[in-house]
Length: 188
View 1 (cartoon, helix red, strand yellow):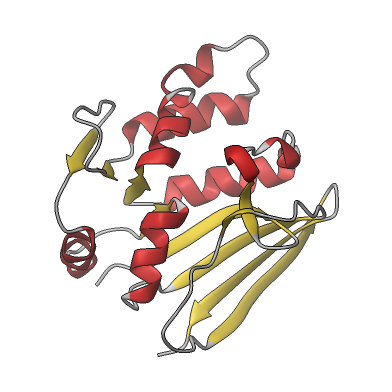
View 2 (cartoon, one colour; view 1 turned 90 degrees about the vertical axis):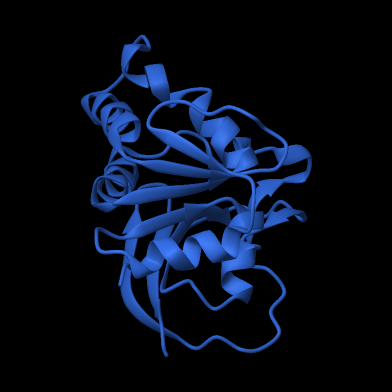
């Protein structure tokens, strides 16, 4: 059975985007933090995206390696991103590209099916999609890069849950800019 990992950058007050979907608060990541996210992407067997995150990622990474000043890590991330199988869950878009397939039906049923397959871990991104997986009890690990900024509102990383989820801390690391990465496993 595959592990489902939800990881993103977020503010100290728990948001992945400020009001208006603004992610400018995170600024460019340090080389070390970017390398950590590259390692995360390289370990993923399949990346699962909600519509908004898909639109953000697919607007840049297909040609991210061709951008002026792209670092070796950014060049590698673009290559890995293009090669990693991806699934986008959306009922409002009708076409995806770059080694990606579109699912317009029941996201939880499809994620459950993918988890039951053999292969590398599944990474999930996008607050709405991950929130549905959280409520269904499907997330096995949380990777949180907390930035020292308060935005006061926006898109929360965590969703409202019907019951508690107990977690076990498995990693803490501080990156330049006082960004703290924590990794938790779900206790079952």
